[in-house]
Image 1 (cartoon, rainbow, N blue to C red):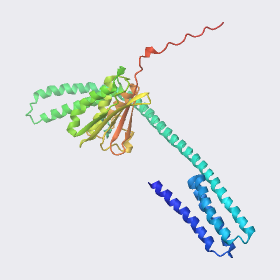
Image 2: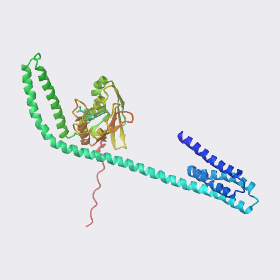
Image 3: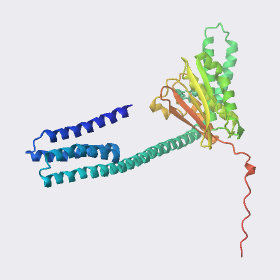
Image 4: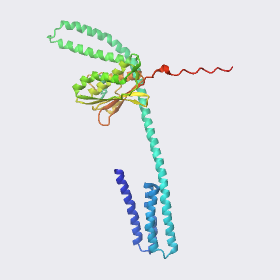
Length: 377
Ligand SMILES: Nc1ncnc2c1ncn2[C@@H]1O[C@H](COP(=O)(O)OP(=O)(O)OP(=O)(O)O)[C@@H](O)[C@H]1O
Ligand SMILES: [Mg+2]
């Protein structure tokens, strides 16, 4: 619509210019030859503009309209000076040549510009993908060194924690629930349980079990995970929508590990919408090489500066969170030959994408290699 308005305005400008110059020719007495010579050249402005905006046909149309209007003026006012009027007719011929020529040049220039724009868009796209790959590499690297360093410490914390837990159980039996200090026993028990969960989570992160890869139906893994979050979603007023591609090939993964990834991510989505919203789970296939699951929510989203940190261990904005859910998920996905990406939604909330490798169908069916040719020694 806006383009249409712009075209109409441009057409009006051209018509007005041509009519204005023509009127000037007709009303200016022929004694002012120098003025007529100026008008004659100003005709080039609308012709060149028309060629530039509309290509050779536009240039030619403007030149022909000018020719007709101007030719009558030459015939009417200048035919008594044949040499001068011949000059003016020659100019008319030039109007048409210039209109066509500039039109062709402008088309060529436009095509050139469009090609350049296309190339620059492709370059920007490639840069973005490179940047994402680099970030992922950096993250994996950072996680690996951090994991090695802290795994030992976490392991050592577990033993004293076990002793505290045992001791408090003994004390609990001696302090009845009615005792004023019983509350402290409860606090110690709760906090040790929380610490234990953090340490256990961290140890899983630092020393993840080797995935037992086998072919699996991704949509089944999604459905069995959704059953687990159903109650929590209902409590928060979150509606779960599914758009699962029924034609997905099987994936080659450790089912329990991928279920855990799906659980962490869908649970985060529900937790982000404590006042209700929509959790959408889609699955699909990308260029026939990998299968993906998108988990989108309509929550408050993630701040730009936090987007890169959500996969870091212990990054959390929740009072009771350990900040290990996504760190573990990222590592599990990577160990299963896949990855996890996050992006902001245009309206609200975020989308986490889990990409997983497709299972090789019947790998033994690969044709055996041809025997090496005998060397002719
Ligand atoms: N869907 C989401 N919407 C908004 N923020 C999110 C979402 N998913 C993750 N986050 C942010 O990323 C942080 C890290 O998530 P992660 O799952 O690693 O830990 P957590 O949920 O805080 O704790 P835990 O999973 O251990 O209970 C969250 O605290 C939250 O700030
Ligand atoms: Mg979480």
